[in-house]
Length: 166
Image 1 (spheres, one colour):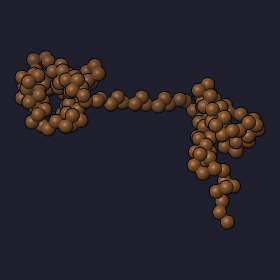
Image 2 (cartoon, one colour):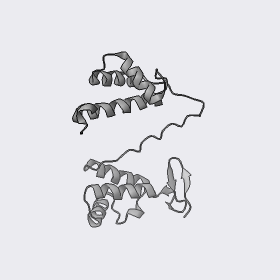
Image 3 (cartoon, one colour):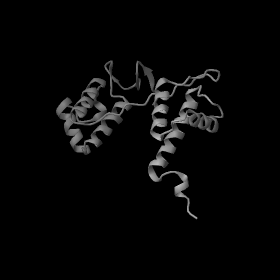
């Protein structure tokens, strides 16, 4: 079975009925997934499809009929998970600068830690990213993760001096 790309749908070229596109593989999988979410068994799903379309088989549905069945399952309470957007791949010579949101989060975490002296953050930066100032998005992420870890340890059991046992 060779699939060809037609618009946004992969359609089997042999799976057309008088020029009408038949159900796609993706629609078939979606219908089964949504019906499982609703706890429907095969018999109940096929009965619902017969009531909606008058057809006794999923594979006999057209693309539009399948879309109607999917909409009906969603209306009954099934949830469709949207695909996550893939990460942007930047060329190696492009560097993303830190964001204002990252800086605000760093300031918040520093405040939560009670670091009043700016030299504390500078020293932490030197230890984590080997620089005094944050320049890139990746560096800001490292600092944020480090500050969150310190804050988590501080909230769990105090500072290191009180946790040591002799």
